[in-house]
Length: 123
Image (cartoon, rainbow, N blue to C red; front, side, top):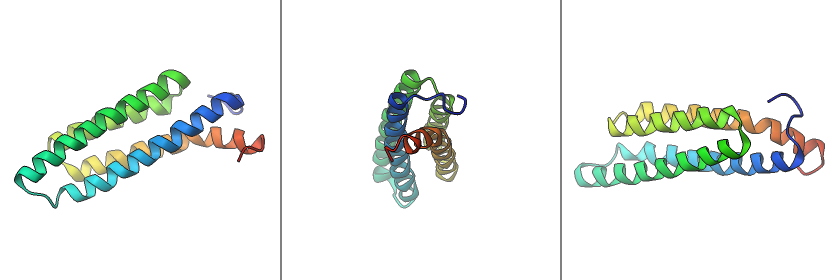
């Protein structure tokens, strides 16, 4: 999307999705940072919960992409799918790296919405 291609309505929707998804990604990163401390049954249970969280997050990112049509949401969804694969492989450090990449994609994509909302006096 080019500069100023977001109208105010779309910018508000983008800003809301960006902030919510970014927050969820940060929570996921924090959980992944702790999962390595767990053992056996605790670890298996934690992995299941994180995979459920990731599935929900993929749905949220997918919804944002379908509503807004912005590439960054699609790319972030791909990163979240990669995170799930890394969790299944117990590659938690790599999973955390992918979460960081997804956060960057979401943040970068939301910058245009933030600029539009600042220009219009909403932020």
